[in-house]
Image (cartoon, rainbow, N blue to C red; front, side, top):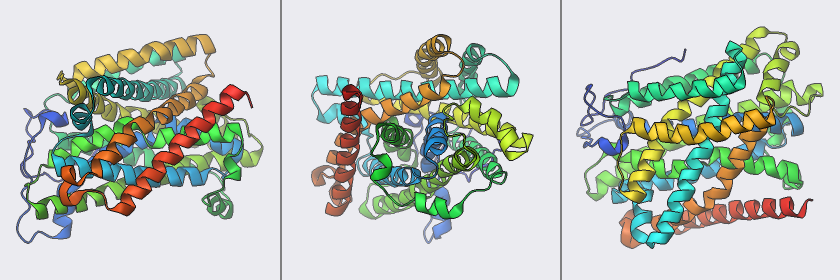
Length: 449
């Protein structure tokens, strides 16, 4: 069971049993005491970055990193690093947009683009949530299969029960959800770091793997995995989510208060996503050390990884930790997917429904393709389906990045919190690089090269 911790109470935010946990339903004004220390301010603003970061550790990340480490050793570690740094830049822009304007990215997209464009963006955002939830379903189903011995189809059906978790949180404060997420992150971290203790990593090769190399991704297979890692790291719906949940720390609208909120939210985002980067790198290092170095270079399925860990590491605990960590990763993403879906639906459509109903809709849409996939492709198809779902996320990412960069660069909208020229430049370079990589992959797939 994951550990849970009680985060510091935020003045102005409801914490009683009558408080809902969806961000759009939580309003308050953070009252920073005069002369508050840096630590006191951090305690107030910490949380949204942590909630967003959990989406960067979902089963899709596990699948892409396990396959990348198995096939190519430590060579694609630089993709994990650059993807994480890109995520930090984009999530900081999201937080800045929400704080400066008091509106999230979905609302701005509806207000600043023609209705037809807005509806198209909504469809793409919903598809990204379904693709992400598909990864959660497959990951948790596989964890049930490995830990409990049930069949994969039964495991898929068991994932429907996570709606009860959301129902159980009805009436809880948003701060309590963040505390649960912290516990799940710690659970994942303990499991991964403990597994690394069972393998002998080549740390010199690890360091070399963080050096960017175009040659390492010149082929279709490594490029496909690299794009999968990008999609698993920088998730489109997380951009909508972050711009909304920072508003649970509603601040005074004067310039110093807004600047202070941006500053401390940036710290929260950077620290949280750096933790996610370390954990994602740990998954790839584990696969490279346990499988690639032992000659098992074709481990593309998570169940293969689970069963191979025992004989390779010489410890049954390694496989159990793998299963527990995978389950925690899948369950933690349940929260972000549900809340992101709520934000997107309200922002684009002005349609507000209870979080548990949103969860039923999202999970129902993900269960069908998951069942079809495991029934038609067999029990050893989960890894391929997970990687494919992450590539789908990457293909949709530019459609969320473009309005985000445009909006946060507008001084008439953002005021003094508009992007400096160099930040806008970095963001546009990321947009061009990710779009080019997606086009390159599509061309290679259709060319059959």
